Length: 69
Image (cartoon, rainbow, N blue to C red; front, side, top):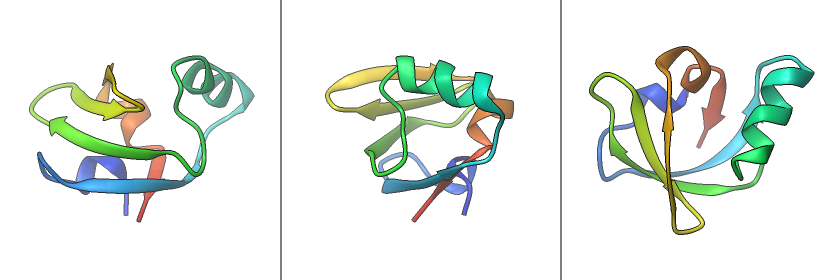
């Protein structure tokens, strides 16, 4: 499922990022990579997640490229 399918409070693990090298690199610089555990804080408008005790805001377009389980 995509990151945008999770509800606030749900946790997940990133299994894949469906994007080009630029998208993957940009996310990696924010600490988002395959295998990372995250928790959704908000999904109204931009998607707000917590990963490694850091709060990160993602646009819905890039959030839809992140596959989680």
